[in-house]
Image (cartoon, rainbow, N blue to C red; front, side, top):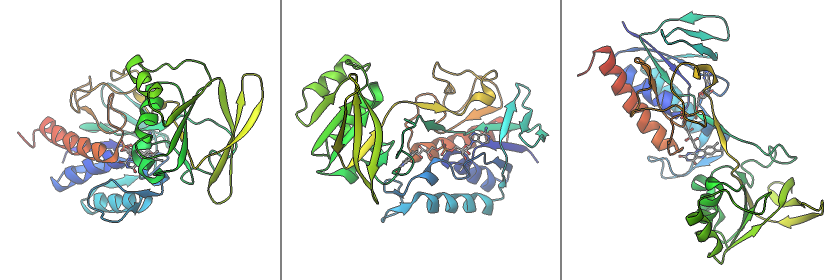
Length: 300
Ligand SMILES: Cc1cc2nc3c(=O)[nH]c(=O)nc-3n(C[C@H](O)[C@H](O)[C@H](O)COP(=O)(O)OP(=O)(O)OC[C@H]3O[C@@H](n4cnc5c(N)ncnc54)[C@H](O)[C@@H]3O)c2cc1C
């Protein structure tokens, strides 16, 4: 039987494992530090099809892990430390295996501000995803931190729901594309706060206010209902950076789900240019499974 190693037990890796398992292939999923992936870190998921009522992210992912196990996937609670071009996978425990195919589905993480209250109020007013949580802030006052394309796009998207959106940036100009910046400046719901950093997040059971410090070291408290942090992301690709082709930000460059190395495939948030949404990761997981089956010669 062919051996397949799926690195990552998030939506992409588990979806691929379900498809591969149902095709009768032997799959081991290395779960890393976050079995179930990023969705286990959020509260309710409202936009994953099939759930008329919001489902807790952790419940959705535990179901997905159980579903993959039902089709024979072996979940291994370990972390991959390296992969070679010859497809030798080494785990933190010291085990080394040589599978017939590898799927990289290790996702990425949002950069954090590293300030008091950030962790405490995550999912209680602090969010890293306007697409996921924006609709929860209808007619509320929200703030976005950042100055790049992602921050600007999150700000514009949030203005569809919120009564007011503050864009807080530590410099006095945005790095985002000029055309996107124009949309910010012409939108009456959006106000830019320049040369300022968020240094504290306060609240009780949920976020109530933030403290801003400007370039003159003057601090002010500001009441808001939601804070969206958009200061970049980093993909989990350190263990393959010398093996497969990566883009400048470290995401894996793929032709559909094939990497630059035959027999090593990729799916989900870790793919260069991916949508960074669960449904997209699931779709790519299914596509990767088909590509792996073709590579192994079990499907035309
Ligand atoms: C707070 C938050 C809320 C979100 N809300 C929504 C939402 O409402 N709707 C939506 O569609 N999307 C949402 N998203 C986005 C969604 O979570 C991601 O698009 C999705 O999880 C991507 O799946 P993935 O499988 O590519 O990666 P991930 O979910 O990131 O999973 C990566 C997996 O790889 C493992 N891993 C990493 N490195 C290694 C290694 N070296 N060895 C072994 N394993 C490793 C991790 O432990 C994890 O199991 C949200 C994201 C966040 C952070």
